[in-house]
Image (cartoon, rainbow, N blue to C red; front, top):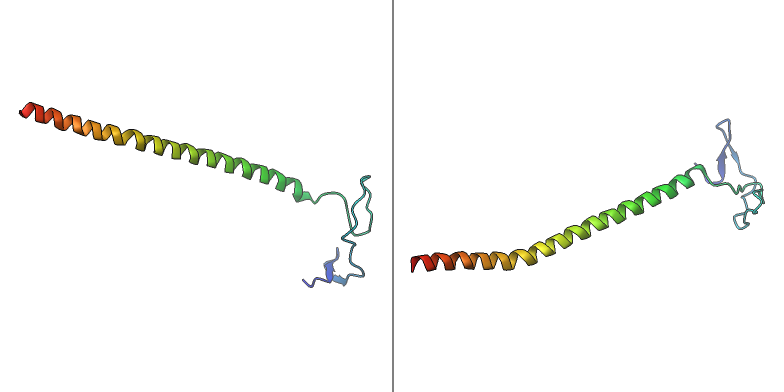
Length: 100
């Protein structure tokens, strides 16, 4: 669609006579300052905030899960290495002790 054209209810395009004033702020009373601006939010804005909140919640939970798994891996590495080495040494020592 051409930027200076806008749709009409009949589906035909007509030339825009003037661009809306982008610099003016909507009034706090809820009335429009200019013809082209409306202080009400678009219908999808509230839904997008909910989506953003859900996304941050999901991100936090994933970060927590990742952190928990990393902690488990580090704990399991630190626990298994001494235990496995010590356990192997004990088994070999016992076998050697039996044979001697």
